Image (cartoon, rainbow, N blue to C red; front, top):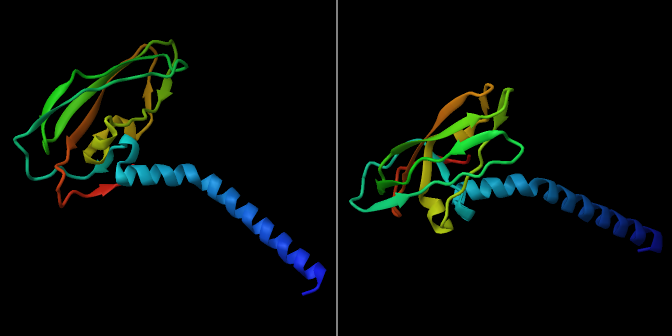
Length: 161
């Protein structure tokens, strides 16, 4: 192959590699989010449509934590720890207060620790699935319906968050 043709082929290969790497970098965050929501990796809970039919006699204590972005003028209070049976659907509520004089919006992000529990912690409904808006000085109780899935569960339909 003549030198100009080799140079052109090399240039095209390098441009293709650079474009491919750019596309992977652009898609990495959404792909990682999908991977975590499907596998529970990194303590990411999954969204479920129904709770398991079997409720275990074994109980666990679930504690909640909140951290609020300093730019969001909300007081955000978690529910008290709850003891739940494995497989039992449980409803708790977080309390939010907009401490500013104007309407504000916020969106919760969440994970589960220890990370090994993430694949078994499923949410049926959560305020964190959508952005929340609070009027000036308003408050709201924001519900979360969840269960801790037994390790060998079948029939639980899950979908990415």
